[in-house]
View 1 (tube, rainbow, N blue to C red):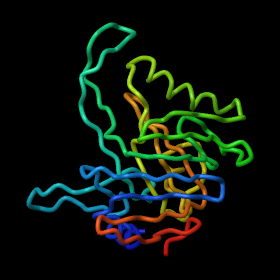
View 2: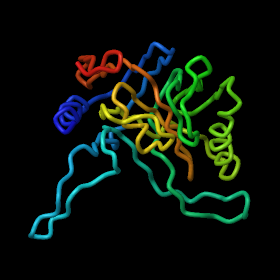
View 3: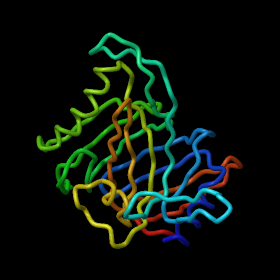
Length: 221
C-alpha cells in the first residue's frame, strides 16, 4: 500500500482537474484548488531521536486524499451567537455522484439498486435523492448543519481506497479504505459525510493540458 500510495501521490501533483465516472452512474468533474494537496495514511514515519515529529494516521490505513478546512466566524442560529468554526475549502465540482457502497452516518451496506444520488454545481451540493428511507439520516446530518449555520454544503474531500483487506463495517474509518472504491465527501460546519463509489474510473488533467487515467473500474493503472 505504501508503494501504491506513493505512486498515486506523484501522479496527483500539479493537477488542475479530476474526472470520476463509475458503472453506477457517477459522472463528475472536480477542480482542485491550489492550496489543497493530496496526502496518505499508508506511510507511517516514527519520530526520531533528535525530536523530529513522526507521521501517523487512522487505523486501518489505506487511502490517499485531499481535504482542508479554514477558520471562519459564523452565526449559530440556535444560540444567536457568533462562533469560530472550521469550514471546508471548496473543491469546485460539477456533476453527479452515485453512492452505492456505504455512506458516513449510516451503519450498513447501501443497496446499489437504491443508491444515494447527489448533485454538485460549482462545488455546492444542490440536490440529494435516495429511495431508501433508511438513508434519510444521511440527508438529515447535512441539512441540520445548513439550518444551524446558514452556509452551503460543499465538496470537502476526495479520496481513494487502497486497502485490499478493508470491508464494509459501518465504521467509515475502515469503509473508506476499501480498495476498488473512491469517496467524495460533502462537508459543512461540524458535518462531513463520506460517499463511497464502487469501481470508479479516475482521469486527471494537469496544468500543461496533458491527461492521464490513473484508475479504471477501481483498479490502478
